[in-house]
Amino acid sequence: MKHKILIIRFSSFGDIVQCMSVVGFIKEEFPKAEIHWVCRKEFSQILSIHPLISKIWSLDRKAGFKGLINLGKSLRREKFDFIYDAHSNIRSKVLFLMLFRKSNFIIRKKERFKRFLFFNFRMKVLPTPFKGMISFREPLRKWGITAFKEQNIKWDFPIEISEKIDKILSEYFAEKPIITLVPSAAWKLKRWPIGHWKKLISLLKEYKFVVLAGAEDAFCEEFVEQASERVLNLAGRLSLLESCYVIAKSDLVISADTGFLHFADLMHVKTLALLGPTAFGFPTGETVKILQVPLKCRPCTKDGRGRCSQKIHQKCMIDITPESVAKEVRQVIIN
Image (tube, rainbow, N blue to C red; front, top):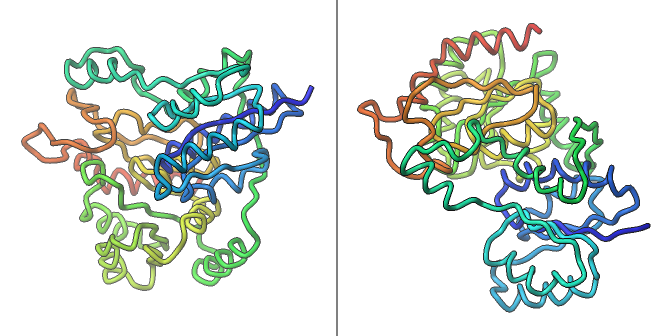
């Protein structure tokens, strides 16, 4: 029997990437199913590389509530058999009210009350570490999906992107391993200090690096000034999907809690995850090694917002030393 299945996850980049891991498991249980996905318009390009997603429905935030209602009307005509609300926000609840009849509906709950107890009273009511990919898989058990073995998926990057990035990387790196640095993050509290990144580059003189960040991250130029012949700064010069292709082609990624960390996890790329204050940024796969320091105050924030309680600001990130990371880099590259 051919089913129609809808996944609702509008944003953000990191959450969409982690949720993408469920598509293969759904397809295994329902091999003839059409899998549709609803997301915000700016993230549709990321979902487009997944070969098992049949159709992407995008919502332009500029369209407002009227645009959401019109989207709901279009989705209602599809008559979905299964719907997975992987977002659980106001927009997804509106779609739920429009679509839930005659469908098998599951929800990934945000556990807001448990989060309140966790962050404000340090009550152990949430898994520690909290692994996002696993949290997106758990609701699938209600559909009888319980086998979560690693999958080998051939991702469909557009040919124009693969040719462009392959040319850039082959010219710059030649025979050297591609080590990608992700020094930025949406919230500064979860960033590894800039001085630590510069020290790491100076310690690893035998390697070259590519840097991924946004156009607003002007500090990345400091890495080039320090070692111009060994650092390719692509901050703000690539699209999101082009940056993702760089991650996919890397031999090693070094990142704090960012969407690119989770994309590397999804792609099974060797990664060093520099984790400090955040609770929900823990990767899942065996190709990612987590570097962290044990502090009683950790984790202290959902996504990096808030204030540091320590006398040494960002102690949880500062104490992950460049020397320790450099040692891990050499071990990973050698192996």
